[in-house]
Length: 605
Image (cartoon, rainbow, N blue to C red; front, side, top):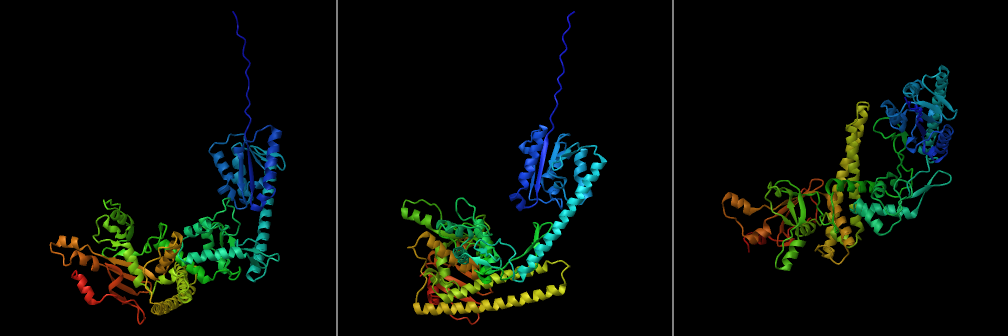
């Protein structure tokens, strides 16, 4: 009987996997030798053992401290431990660390309980590359004492370094507050620290750009439009926070412009920070009150507040696309007087007629309509947008000085008054924000302190209100006296300028409107629908209906208001102008039509 030869059994030994854990706690260490040193040690050990270290098995916690266990809660080490617990890491695998303190510098017993024992119990071999020692399960009692001693030493070193660092930075902060050495060379990109470290030196070319950004903001241009203007003119970019731009395309970004407009360093303020571990603080909290005069001033605090108020008004009332020429000056401010719905702008339609002129008129005519008419909740009629705009700017001449804007803003008196009003509005918003914060404080702040601050803020707010009223009266007198001398009336925006120039002009106008007007209420009832519903004949002819069927109420910030019945046949004329709440202010607009003309218009003559 033949016998088959037995096949020899081949034993295939699986090579264990290696994982390298690399950690450093500061950006300085990243730029230095820490990463290279730890990487080379892991590579040499694997080469000696004949184990391949796969790139995906290299775990890094860059700039994460182990003193408070952040690498366990947020870092790669915490993810590795979770994988071990889930059984995703095979037993017998190696975890390579430069030294045991790379795993944690927290209180030693926590280190051993949470990290080392957890790894060993899962049959993960810990290798400390500085000693070449391997720790396995079951662990030698002598090795336990060695690990405890090493952990205690690392914890004590970290605590000592922390105390020294805290003391050093406290000394630096004290010097900064006393006007001595500056805290750091890091500063906004329009300046740099001098060699003696006691003053920041301005860079004139960049200062001019920052000042221009603020001027454009106060003129009513939004962040996107400012960014587009800088890029169109090929202005050399830099970041607003303190570093040169790394943008390879050499273009301004919206974020950089926004950073400059939010940087309180423009008026010299510096807020020192301290590290904190409270939730929601992003690792830093304010250290005391801001230092005024720390940086060179390039924009006054009033101008900064004015810019902030203007941007806040845009966010709350004037969001959305503005078109090539800032088509709607009343975005977010126009409301239907009948139902309270918002008035929106759109083109009349795409009606195609045999007459090309009619088709073109439909395409170019813009209207204001109540948003509630779309779903049938309102029956009010729409307004011709251009006619309404012309009427508004004609009879708001004491509040909105379009002539100065069109003529290049050469009237210094008007600019001074408008500038101060913008600054007062900005300060008002800042104070109201502070009042809101005070009212939300918990019981840890003494009530007497809160009441004292609230009283101080209220006193300042009352002064702002009175000062704004005085400036509004002053502006009305200036505008009226200039008009009387020049005898020039608004007849629309120029048509012989570029789209960019027209946009800037209209943006400034919209900003002036937002700075003084709370809201505009437009009234134009659909009498035909009302008549049909009531079953009676209309009291007016179609011709008269088109001239006297409308009015609008302008409500100003501060409580004053103006009611206007415009002539539907001529936007620059009006039948009735009623001023309310202006007191003894002189030079207010008046109706240009007589009561007889109004009666004739109602009769259709």
